[in-house]
Length: 193
Image 1 (cartoon, rainbow, N blue to C red):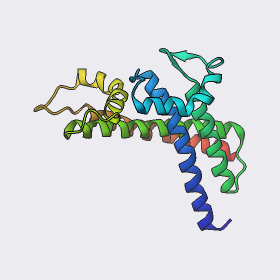
Image 2: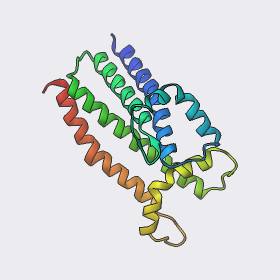
Image 3: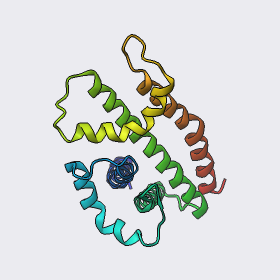
């Protein structure tokens, strides 16, 4: 496959599987944060993922009244994504490396998604945003579990809340210090190096 078509295919694969992973991860985060179920965004997430999540709930345990089935489905999507990307590059990966590579990819995806949510919550708190829009409470409720502990430790300085900044900094450090080494190790394992 020529370079242009391979690049286009890589973009399409990353986008498609990223969208699927986002649905399942957002559903899990909504359940963990106990976001208002009657929020239209929650309704969409639950309807879009219901067909696959509900049968798995019988076999997959729950944590804090939140099913881990969406996490398992997001992981399966990450495995398929990494497999397709490696096959597109002309590499047949070793299975243990592929499975670990998917863990690193999913962990990085969750961290980047959560960083975006925290950033959006911080922006909405700085500007006059219509509170009636369903996106506002959805983002604030999902960001709250990460920001609440930091708000207890970090005082307001001049009326400014720096907890989102610290949360984003911690996520960036986790990506560099945890995810990247895991990704590098998994890639060597997948390639059999």
